[in-house]
Length: 239
Image (cartoon, rainbow, N blue to C red; front, side):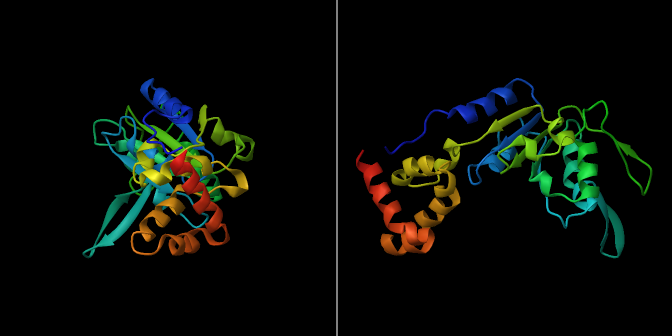
């Protein structure tokens, strides 16, 4: 059945509830393409700023804490995402959204663990000038991952994030980007195991069919599943 998703699914209601009640460390996990990162960056109190860190094996601590960079003939310090989130707007801490922290290399992972420790324990000393930084009050962290079992993540990491919420549906705000006839099927397919189709694929299909025949757009985006997806969209539209 086609839906506008005017009420929050349970997973997103939980996220809103923990944000509203002062939880400052949250893991959002589950299938990709459901709006985990977007909501981490935009939902709740992010007035002091929200900063994203996408973890890879090739990243360095410069991405996390910062480094000196040459600009117009002079070196100046450029803070990394975590330090920016610690400082926020200068009066209150912001939010750090960390995507796939389990993919970070050893040194970076160790630095992130330190940056994500409790406010009473977290500190970082700038090796260049000896200045010790600590997170300003109000700093929060949201981690997103496609890992399904928390046992796959290092215990030292999960211990820092006592609240973990499995996101199994696209957020209603994300669904509004889609045409109405695609919203219901997008919800159904978001957590369909090996058959799942991400919200990003439906967005691409929605965009392509504005300039191509619908069947051609479906073939390009969904491949051999195009016919079955088209049938499901048609059934959903008349249900």
